[in-house]
Length: 193
Image 1 (cartoon, rainbow, N blue to C red):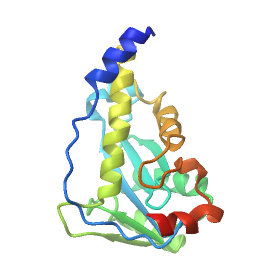
Image 2: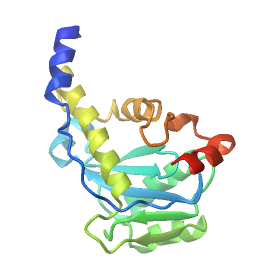
Image 3: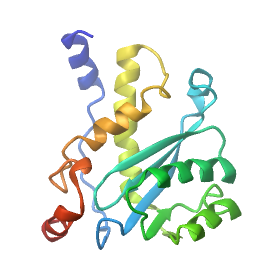
Image 4: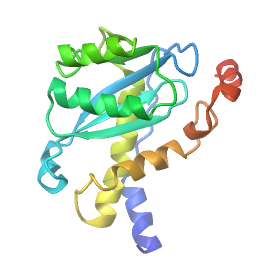
């Protein structure tokens, strides 16, 4: 890609800056809380092997993200994707926050949460799980830049590259890359944020 084309794409997809007052999310440590959400990618399913959704999981403390494609918005499919993500984690989180969707409130998903001893809950607010909602926007913006550069809507083959790029980019609130956060520096991060 030419640097001129990349510059045009970056300018086209640059987010408008708006600061809204939000409640702070209180996290007590590295493995305290994850937030999860299902992102719809339905219009692009045909060019993405029938995958219509992406399950996004973020560790609220470290800002580390995992993502798995999902074909159907069913308890079984979402649970299978979540199980795959949990197997990639270095440590199992104590709490999991989601919206009230049936894809999360079903027997299969609740059994998985019980098996791993994860406290699953939802917030009864229009803000929902604000940290994961924000990272959804960031990941979608990175995807749309690639769509513009590549001239197609195939996201299935770039999803993990986008997540890796996000996890290896310095985060404003923790002043580190999410991939650099560990038990050794967690206490310092907790004190400075």
